[in-house]
Image (cartoon, rainbow, N blue to C red; front, side):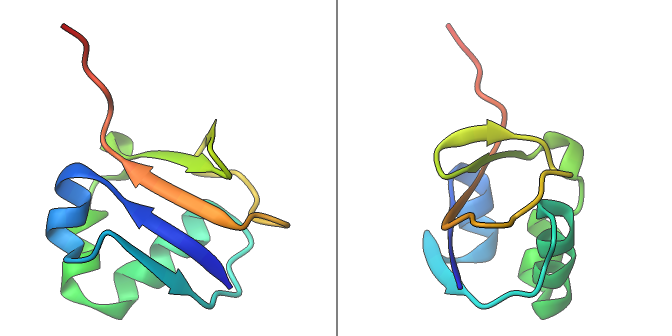
Amino acid sequence: MVEVLYFAWLRERVGVARESVETSAVSVADLVEELKARDPRYAAAFGDTSVVRVALDQDLADISAPLAGVKEIAFFPPMTGG
């Protein structure tokens, strides 16, 4: 079981800010595919993963990163400064 957090427009598209997810995914990419298969809202949110950033236990990671031992996964859009 992992805690999944969604921020900004990802949260808006999915419809929740956080949820506990039971998964057998080995990597973040595998988890994204599981989520996309759940519901069209997830498919819309993760339609283009090149514009999605991820943090595993509050450390930035790549979409191909392994999930072994991870307790929290956060998805968010790229940050802009100004």
